[in-house]
Image 1 (cartoon, rainbow, N blue to C red):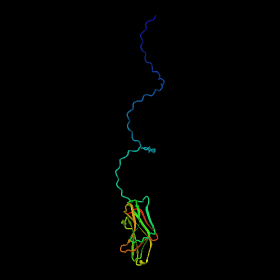
Image 2 (image 1 turned 120 degrees about the horizontal axis):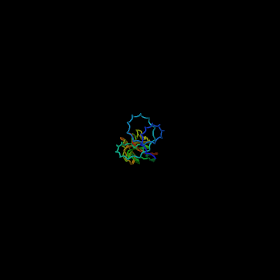
Image 3 (image 1 turned 120 degrees about the vertical axis):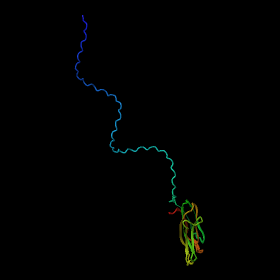
Image 4 (image 1 turned 90 degrees about the vertical axis):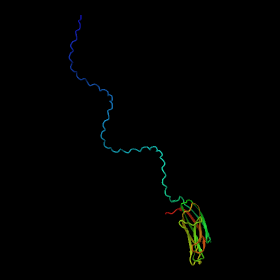
Length: 224
């Protein structure tokens, strides 16, 4: 027959620490902690070397249209300069043989294209004074019936001395000049004969036994 169990004994003393166990496997990474406050700005670094030049960028869109600028100062009027083409005319007559002593010999109608240009005119043909002593005849140009005033008339004279009554000097002669301040449009250029100042009415002849010409050309005005 069994007896009653006895009361528990006094607990024994703690045993000695056991040896360190083997190193366990590395644990997984922990969670990222919260961001810390910004650190103090460090001192400025030294300037680096210039980098290589980059490629050209694409052209940007056109900008908005600017406001219209004010009117500029008016420029000084200029000379016509060289015209894009020559404007000229020649009227010619064979054996004109005009025995007139005073009046219009011939005229030639010319169309002038600009106002601020000049007319260059020339006569080539035989002129003569005959059967008079110390006599003079004058041949001259007109423009719509008036002689040139700017700069001066365009004319020429033939004079015979004391022995003129025995002379009959038919000679081809040339009279030439420029006239300014002539309006544009139709211009009637006339070639006339008349008396020289302080001389009587001599015997004239124009265009004997040869070709006579009136040449007209529109040209830029002369330099100042």
